[in-house]
Image 1 (cartoon, rainbow, N blue to C red):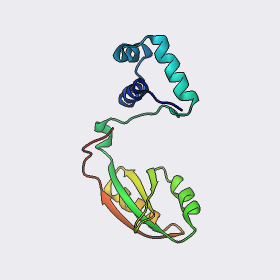
Image 2 (cartoon, one colour):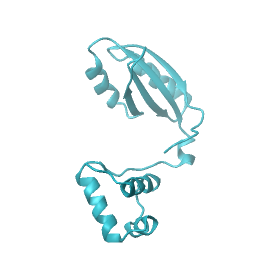
Image 3 (cartoon, one colour):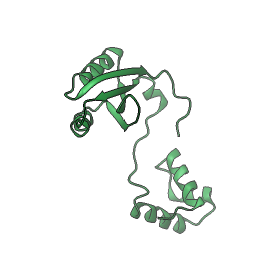
Length: 143
């Protein structure tokens, strides 16, 4: 899989707005519409672009309480804990990490009370030994 500088520019534009029309992408990249369409199809076919999704507005996200939940798990429980965490819709992202914690879950809840309930639920999962949470106050950079 070979990614060119123009492919990177295209991916950056899609990161800003995945619904941007191909004609607009072509104009901003200085390429023909056909060329951009072919690049998109190649990037999808090669698995660089796995899909297109919704990016929520700051106004909506500012109404959610988001947090990082650092999780330490018992040995050999990663697969089971990962399955259980993936079933919790408020868990938006799950990272495996090194260090004193094994996982970092990014969670979002509509209120502090719901966030508290969610963190308690995560802490009670079989295989979870301990958690440490940090509420996200603001996002300084999002790419």
